[in-house]
Image 1 (cartoon, protein in one colour):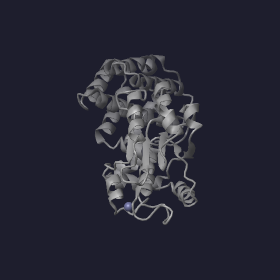
Image 2: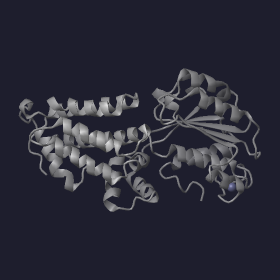
Image 3: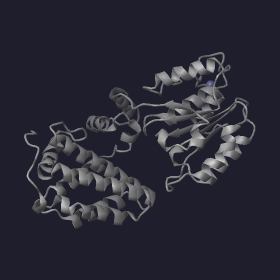
Image 4: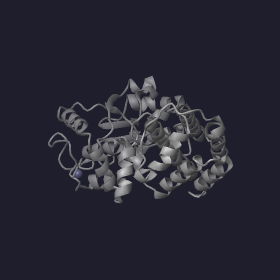
Length: 354
Ligand SMILES: [Zn+2]
């Protein structure tokens, strides 16, 4: 049933229903919200409801019938009047060529006569060139057409773009919705389901990316290495590089694995900080607690913060396409002064229990 795949964004569904019922649909919307909360999925459902060929949107509440040819074509991602554009994974800015293609295709007459919809991901990554190329289409789209741009933060949007769009905000989802959506994506192992729900912070899409047991096992190995009496940065660097290269030959695949590994490491370090301040861990489960407690006991909070900073810098370098192995070995080296027991200072926080 239409909209049944959308959880936690009922207010936005009602709002679009109301707008369409009153015939006030704008020609461009900018969806803003954290990654992985379902903005793109929402855009696809909205597109399906608008391109549905059963009756007209004015005759029915904004909902796709899921049976007509229009709905089936949208579900199969082959509808001739539905266009997608996104930044290719190996780029770090939205290429003008992708935007040019979209604008050209969007300029043609609707093939099935029910309007056109364009869904543009990665609006955060427009550069001057791609944004300028898009402006004319954004200002004067063909009649009956709709453009949906998707970004994560209003601050990252260009003024020229955001001033021409209606803004729709999406919030993180409740844990129960995250859990249901993960189950719908075939995450059935209860341990994985629990840990992903905890780590998701309302974003099932982000959590789903971490539904790989080998990532979690490698995280335990990393923490183990960091809590040895003598920290061996060369061994950690080699393990990191080997684990990342094991994901596949393509640099896109390796970069993704490196980012997933960093995400989990950052979650561990944040958990150690929580333990040090008397809070409870969010991403670690019971079996991991002794290791985490050992890290929290051994490394001072200011040094854990410094490790977090190094991890964030590493994420940034990975995004800038510096050689992956160099970046990861550099991270392991940067941990040396932070994990060396000779430089440890007495614990300021005491009394946390495991
Ligand atoms: Zn339909």
